[in-house]
Image (cartoon, one colour):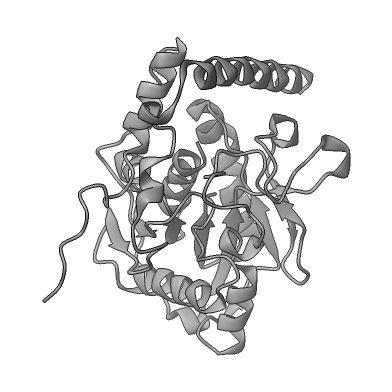
Length: 127
Length: 173
């Protein structure tokens, strides 16, 4: 949901007259929403701003985002960072992949999902 | 000669995976935000003379709300529901246990991977950027697009304006 939320936020701020750039890791969600400028890093969610304890990759990611901000010729500009998480890229086969889940995993996740929904409902009711 | 990439080595199709996953769990398909028209505002001055606002989806650490990591399980209690702001002059303790990041392959041990404040200060010191806005802003991540569009996004734009931001950098988790 994070990537969808920031897509909507970027669109609103841009329409309000302030140029925006998103630094993100979920390419399909951001592009499906449709945003002005997007630096895509093909890394696990949680690392949109660079690799952990790798200051050089964090610095390079910001610099690239700033260049996207400066040079985008129009809306829906996506630039993909050359950053690699690792060589085999097998992490991409794991995220929410049903092929890798047993029926027990699924039952557990269903239970967790219901618990999360209940927690959120209590919180939002109070507001 | 350059070696060809592996077949699986493409951006993860998150929408498809999520759709399949929730259908399998017995929940309906989610309709993702989707627009044909996209706004665009050109920059009016060089970045070296611009003030940048940073927007994050990370949450302020609240010790009373359970394990928030690094490496914590998904923690819905740590979610926040209204836009917040805090000073960019100090380093805040922000966590991401309330969102669905990749818990198998990353542990959220280094906040600089989702909150680039240190790198932004460097860019200002190097003259690459004019300045940072005095505050950064926190955006709630909401399943309801209506709430984001009608309440949170306008509040974030308002903060950008109050702080005289010329550009905004938005970093999801």
